[in-house]
Length: 240
Image (tube, rainbow, N blue to C red; front, side, top):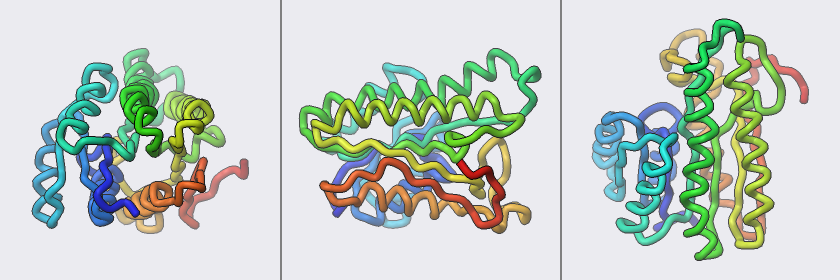
């Protein structure tokens, strides 16, 4: 169903974003992958070596409006359209609220919230004109409850959840679907951690989240999946 469709994936240099790109490419999609550093170019080469030729890497800052407008415009120039936007770029840290600097607070909101807003804003006119499209944002299970030492990060995910819900109502008349995927603990590089640590062996894997993206994006046109929440059995969490 996704064969020959075009996707933009942000935060695709490594971790969840890279695996999302792999899974979408396996479905036959043509991809623009976006990363904040030159690592995105290396990732693109790796994907091409895996047998996926239609990979268009762009180094860009999701928190800058001109960057995200350029990403969408360049994707349309290369592939002719955008069928799917995956807002995956995100940052996070965990510390007591009084220890959070204003610069850290601003940074996490600029990437996690402003980045989602700017990418979505940039792609919407094109999707509205075509009267089709899907926007998926990788959020977090903390968009449903709160945790200690995570006030800034949790606040961004509540914001993303509210933003996505409002946008979904705005664009449904154009045939555009908007949803979020809210993972619990995932074995990745999040918060400057290391992927593959022994203590993470029972956590979700990056392919679990990527498979959820494929499922949501592949839903038949008459079906709208508003939200997917995924936890590992090993995680204890409050019942919302």
